[in-house]
Length: 456
Ligand code: PMP
Image 1: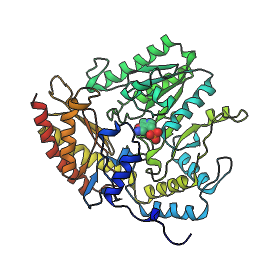
Image 2: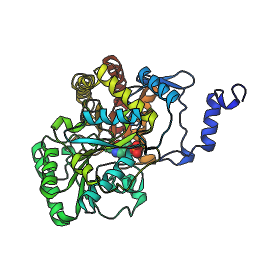
Image 3: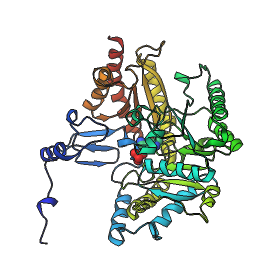
Image 4: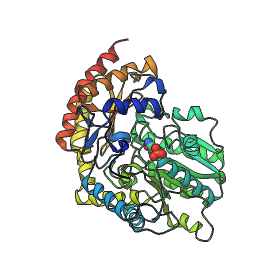
């Protein structure tokens, strides 16, 4: 073929939009009601449209661009791998795959020494649960109401939030529980310690009445992500670990969102020195530059499959391009001290900044988080804690939140919004000045929230 074809030429914004509307079927959306913004480019913590209008990204897309956009070292690693070896099936060993697995295992807690690679989070959850069931010979899985685990058949059945409703009845053997969330306590607790004790007692009671010998796994997000950035009280994860040990249950920590720097550590469980049996990861492992996820597996569970085949696999498991970018990403995290920067942003910039906003804005019910993983929960009334919009609000009911989000976007800030919350989840590499700039815009947008809360 001679020279570039039309397919290789750049399309203008109108054409991108036209083809998108005609042929791209979008996630989670009523197709006729959406008008996705064409993105022309991105760098660091910013992305821009075709007219050059720039947005500071306080969402990290879907909380995955932990290292920022277009990091040159990742771009180079992907280019190098592309020029050398683009694809080889999971049945072979390959240099980037071997290195990525070793580097991830070295940074994982204690005895988690093997990695099963997937293309994303949902597949990781599916395979972790499959491993737990085969390891224990039991079938039930306990999963939290306030959770999201992915959109494949098994993962959506384990998800607790309303995204599961359309897929019900889901899977057999899912037992739901309430995790800790002091601000809206399911246990009428008034202190973190009470919330912790009661949440653990609730879990223990459920294990009793379900029958411990039928329960394969307890699944949790180490820090709950999309359902509110719920940081567990000290002692909660250790308490779950203890229940799992007592009853021979596999502890599965879903760190698809919380892992790889989001909480200022490689893994969120590192904050509490708790060692799960399985950890699922994706997103931040390579910032989504190439689809990648996986399950970190303890020696004990891995040994179950030493002489018995593991009945699962994916054509693209451990894809060389994805693994090459994961290797480069882990190196960059260490070279640039990104974990320490993420902790600094949480402790010295985002945390204090949001607490200051909470004092001045009557619509802020609570701010909470750690690292670069924060939520601002908006309410109509601080005493009753009535949410600014109803649970799972859509259409006109969602208008007050849409107004707040719109106020951010008009000012060049791209927030992550869910129900009555704005999540502050920029890339871990965002500078102090950029974060302060974003918080100043959020300050203005919260005036809109205050007005919305007061008007009814
Ligand atoms: N688990 C958690 C905690 C998540 O946040 C997500 C995605 N938001 C998933 C699983 C699913 O990941 P994916 O979309 O890559 O399948």
